[in-house]
Length: 528
Image 1 (cartoon, rainbow, N blue to C red):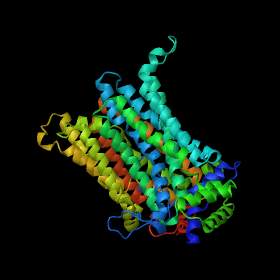
Image 2: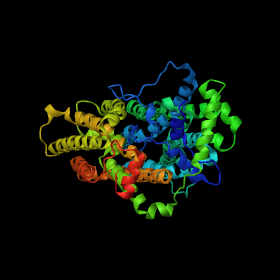
Image 3: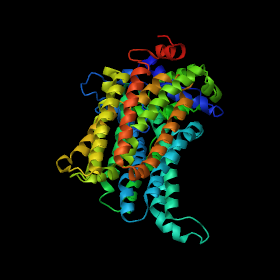
């Protein structure tokens, strides 16, 4: 095994319970800037450059499924990613559910906006909770708690109409307010899942397949969308909630009965025997002494990392410069409208009067998004992040503009019977372009721009900002689209994509071919 590679990928801070921030920081040292294939609003994938197969023309990272010695590792990764699928279920629930509830007169546009956006409110808190709790509870226990919270939120969401009538008469709470609380709790769980699940997978994986296993996060997340899009339009809300129980309950059951804690976490707590046992099960071999020693070395070396305080992070010019570049790009990512379209895909397609039913259209969008996400890692390695960001933002600008123009023509009563295919085609091509750059690029640059000393705090802060942007946009979209029309909304999204293109071309540094040391020197000293 390549010792140097392991040091780079698994370098960790000493696990001392009284130094949570320092320990959590260490995980982010292993972030590889060139391998993220991330659907919005937030997925962070980590791995080592050595584990990426860029030779395949498709850009798809391949896993040797015949390596039977990794059977337990693959099983653990898939099971852990049931939490990711559960997060996708929670995020996509609003797309089929909101139209059904509005058609039945159960909620109005104002309540629909709150019901959708409350998840983002909770998710903006989740990263900071994970930052504080992941070392106290461990990766495994925190994921178990996340699943319990998510299951509780689904119970609350499903039973809200039945609970409200049984509350005390003087309690000013109705069913929709209980659903707000349920969505808030599910958001907290989603925010934690996005931080902890990639961490757990990165820590149990060996160097050779770490990046490939990390790429499964994307697929399970979008598959979670696909489940909601496929079930919601054709079955009752009760059935949809029951189906949404499957992934968190599966994850909870397997974590409680089969899967081990992260060996890295156990070693950091001084539990060498437990760490050895966990590694032996994951690697399916008795002799793991070399890997244990390498973990010890990386833990020892990580003690020398000097972490900045929150005040230093927010007052030092170089740190602020890094935050500015990444958070600005995250803002443009969300202003491109991608999360709004994912959350409201069925209502949006219903506005278009397309020959394709909204339910089938949303399923098609999820499938396209999943397939397009396969290409992002290979394309990024070949062309560089900045070029793909430019191409992505230009493509999104064009197809959002075309969609806005279609809505405008429809609004002024132009006969569009021959062009009903245009909205679905625009959405499909929009997601194809978004997935190769704006979806993954900001998180990839976060891995490059945030140095080890600021990575944990900056990553949590960036994730929180991302979800805040999601909340604002998902809250404002329904009333604005109703009062001003969808043409205005999509024209604004298109305009922001154009501004994003200018920002990337003029202001964003091009880090292609640069080492992490050179990137940090450029950002902090202005020199290559």
